[in-house]
Length: 201
Image 1 (cartoon, rainbow, N blue to C red):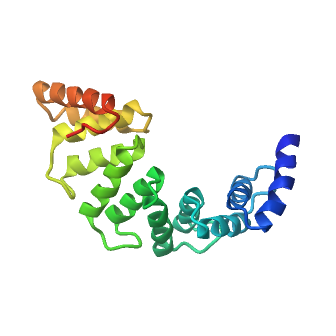
Image 2: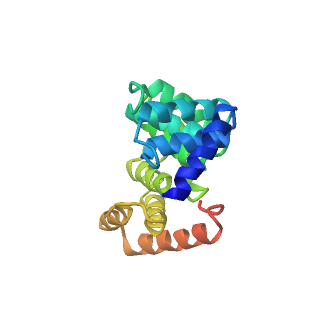
């Protein structure tokens, strides 16, 4: 704890001088209540300063604060704005979150095709939640043609990467599939993971 308190003392003057990394670190400290009392308003303040300098992690975290209404009134349009800025920098978490916003129609008009686009970008970076979401859109046929084999593949990959409930969703889906189709899905999952998510079609 002493080391963290020392780090906080070091970050504050740097943050006040405009250092984006220090601003982000202070935001995290206030967000989590590490070394300082938890204070979402202070977290938002520091995240915003870093986010305006283009810090993708700060943009994601600021988007989440707007998404959840922590430290600021809940505002899905603002959440989308910050998620998009980070997503366009290639941040997988932001891409996954932005896909969810399009899929649910929060802060943007509902657009499953756009949701799939962002889920795929994040999934190809190994984001387990985006992989589970891809499984769901293929299972439901939202934004893509319904395809149980591809849905099974993504649920399987997502489960391997630790996403909660992805394994049970895969197993439930398997009950609707022929054994040969399950084998195909499993083989495709191995190829997809083995190619670092570049050969998944």
